[in-house]
Length: 324
Ligand code: ACO
Image (cartoon, rainbow, N blue to C red; front, top):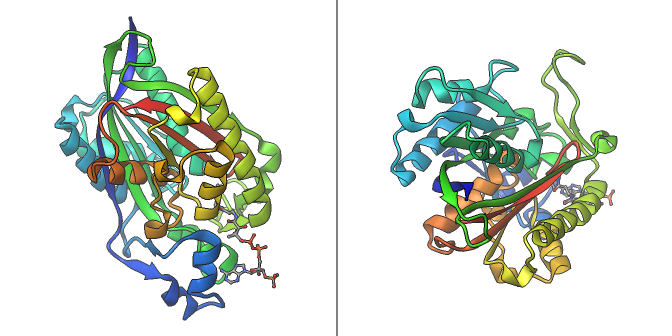
């Protein structure tokens, strides 16, 4: 027998305000055609004035709790993956805990930028399998609009705000791949590439929040290689091939990365969940946003095998295999 971390509920939230490519093109030197061709993005959502990452996280978490049919009082761990917390501290997770859960339970943030949800899932899975938590809330939530340089066309067209959440709980499994729940997680980082995708500010360096800076071409090149590698390692660890997967739910960075990765894996493009067109790159929120959409529209069904993968600043990257 082995403990498994089973996804009980999913939820997401996108801020009401959207910015189309055409609206961006009216402000900076870009075009809808360039953005769609290079990224597949059509629009992004942007938090309202005063709307914070914790507000997005709480809205997504409420939907995940409702979907799971679980009361916030039953949660015994809250993890928020974010690179855009409300404040440097306290953790955004503590705000979620105060709003939705019992006082006294552990809550903390995980910072792995776009890989944050995969890192968070690995952390929560290890808590569950170690017997230290029975029911957890894992949220990816970001307000990247706050750290974009809206005059820099090489970055500002790529990102958006949003949040996605899962409620997981411990269940006894057999240890076999037929179990429901997280079957394996795989995490990596290579900080030698920290200057390819970073924010040019921070509490201990500039005492400012800073803006996103990126060497897009290099990021693209590393992303396609690292993502394919981690998918292969995840499949190998579970004695599977790409053909055994029901769904790939990738980090929604841009359409060309998703297509190149699927092609490199020889994966049927119809098995790849793609939502980047609707909300751009929402960093740690993008996997649970895509997962939520595909569960709610009936594509992803209980018992199906879902592989998730992500890469982000650091670089960090990783994958997770889950039977829903
Ligand atoms: N609108 C119009 N032209 C633009 C824009 C824009 N928004 N941005 C850049 N350009 C111009 C450049 O200035 C350049 O012009 P030049 O040839 O006159 O110098 C030209 O377009 C080509 O620029 P490149 O950077 O070479 O364009 P590329 O084809 O590499 O596409 C892109 C850029 C979309 C950023 C691509 O490199 C990419 O997708 N990189 C991955 C970045 C990413 O997804 N990061 C997210 C975080 S990491 C992750 O989540 C995996």
